[in-house]
Image (tube, rainbow, N blue to C red; front, side):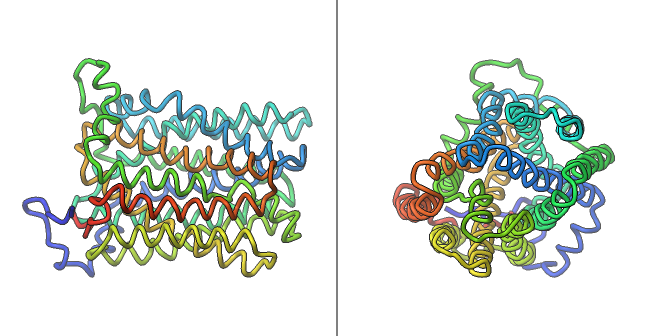
Length: 420
């Protein structure tokens, strides 16, 4: 299957290809959208380093690091179908605005608890759950908003450019968060809260946003419409389920404090570098994909990238050298970004606007399961077997899943291009 057919009146991909990055940067709505992505990613990554280090300092437990991921993920399970229907019925920009402010308020709560020395581990878990709830509303709504502010013909490049904005912030965020936390935890959390407020202000100025596209009564069928739509489209089902199981098994993010402290023997600064390395790889790849369309063999390229992700995970887990570990995480991030762009482009191109909220909500449930639930799985396995065996087993599992999915979803393997 290929998704190469351009809509009537759209500029053919080969025409104006050199000007498309400039077309994106001249779109003021897309620039504001990018600011929101940058601010949100800076805040999330910086706060994640601070929260992970706080929990590990208090407990020294791999299980508790895994619980951080679990508490982020649980609200997503509860709210997924509510989120999708809300995003398809109400002003998407306003939803993002209030989610940004809610996250800023939670970081202010953590800041107050640290400053007053009354913050317990259970309070941190509760705060993480609220952060997860806010992000479960924000992330799918942001993705559903993007196709309404850029032309369909350059959507893949918009997705890749948006990813590059986010990955740039993801590189800076952990390093900045780790460095500031070493100086003062108050400073780290306070700056992350400021970033979230800045993102809320930016999204308020985006024009022409989705308002209310779906006025039909809410029924059981419409409530679960996103699931039904994905089940009817094996290409979308295949790509988001591949990402789910590959990252669920192969994710080592939750274990980075253990690798930094006990295996590589670095401090908070080393943890920040380790958290930044995958984002640097992803940024490098997203800059390439923002200029070059996946015009030939997109499906095969995505499967190759997932296999490389698994291999890099295994090598990282066995490494005792900081330089090699950073290189493996860089490769891991670059490979993962190929999957991100393919998945995001397919979901947006093949979903009608009045369904995008519900479909993206299910998509981000899968992403959340692979990331936050993957952190929980990694923490539990590391608690039982140790960090190194956990990472090696997870990387091998990712390789097995990629090979199996190539047989289960031949339509996905045959996708040629992502041009709109």
